[in-house]
Length: 91
Image (cartoon, rainbow, N blue to C red; front, side, top):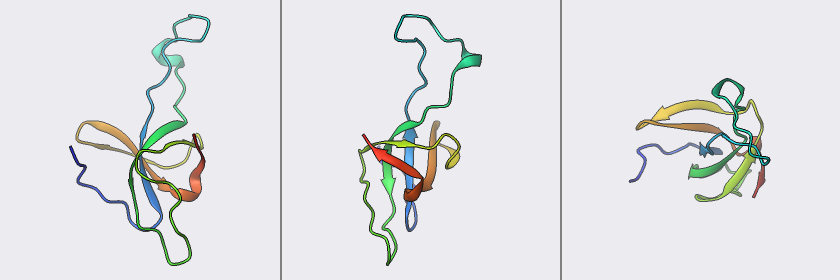
């Protein structure tokens, strides 16, 4: 199902990864202690600007800063929209 949103200029729409519910050693993390994920999948990409071509593409797994982007809810799912400069790395 295609989204009805298209980011403008150098912005990217990201679907955040689900928060970890269990540690590597097998301990379950309660809802109140879960951290905001810093990894997600690129869902939509803007066209870029005259001075800046887009590096990321739809489907890329990316890492981003903890407090970057604007949270929004579309069609019942949570997304983040941010500038490409706020993305730290492609995984």
